[in-house]
Image (cartoon, rainbow, N blue to C red; front, side):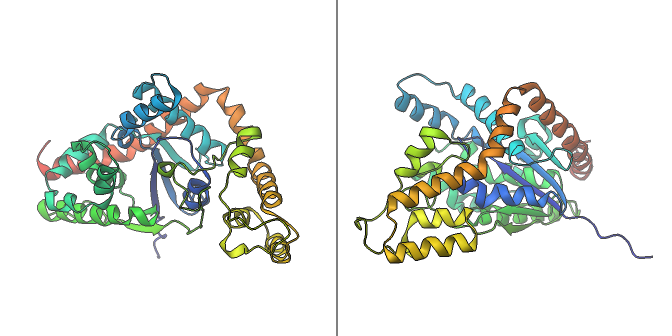
Length: 342
C-alpha cells in the first residue's frame, strides 16, 4: 500500500524592525498567506534577530522625532504591529503556526549547539553582515552569528523549504552547510537539509525608484491611509515631462506600482493614456492612491478591529508558541541524545 505523500513544511520569519510596506507584501507576505493551503507552515516574529539592530533604530528614531525612544518599547510595539499585520492580511492561526521567536527557548539552546560545529570562515563570508557593518551598525557578536540563529530557527522545526528573497539565499546555503556539519559530526541524519523557495519576484520600486526598503526610507506602508498615504504617493519620484506630452510607462515608478494592483485591461488603458499624453503624473498618482486604498481597505478594517483586542492577539501568539514547542522539544530530545547532553 502506497504511503501518503509527506507534506512540505515551510518556515519563514519577519523582523519587527518597522512598519511593513508594499515591498514586504508583494515580495513575501502575500505568498506566505497562499502557502497556508499548500503545506505545514511555521511563521514567527523574529524578535531575537531584531535585537541586533533595534538599539540603532531607536537612536535614529529618537533623533528624527526629537524625543527619547527606548529600544525595548520599540521592539514590543513593532512585534505587536507585525502580528496585527499578518493576522489582518489573512494569516489563519488554525492553518499556520504563528509565534514569537523568544517564546520558543529551544531556539536559543540549539543556536549554541550549532555554533560549536560552525566554522568562523563560513560566518566571515556572510554578505549581509558586511553590508550592515558598512551602514554603521555595530559589529556585535550577535550580528556576526546571525546566520547560526537563522539556522536554528529553520532546523528546530525540521522545516525542509524556506521561502526567501534573493538576498537571503546565502543564509539558506549556510544553514544547509551547518546542518550537514552537525549530521557528520555526530554521525546522525538528524536534520533534513533545507532548500529555499524564492519568493515571487514582484518588482516593487520605492518612492525614489530604488528597491522599496526601510533602509532606503522609500516605502509605502501597507496600512497607510488618508493624508499620510496621499502625501507619500504624491512624493513618488518622476521625470520632468510636462503635462500633455507622451510619457513612457516602461520607465515610470508610478506605473510600475499601479501594475501591482491593476487588471491587465486597466494597465493597458493607462499605458495608452501615457503614450497619448492624455494623463499626467499627478493623475496617475491619484489613480495609484485610489488603488492602494481600495485594495487594503478590508484588511485595514480587520486590523483596526484586532487592535482593540490585544489579549486575543497575545493568545494567538502564545498558542502558536505552544504548538511550535511540541516540534522543537522533539528535535531537542534527538539533539540531546546525539550530543550526549542527556
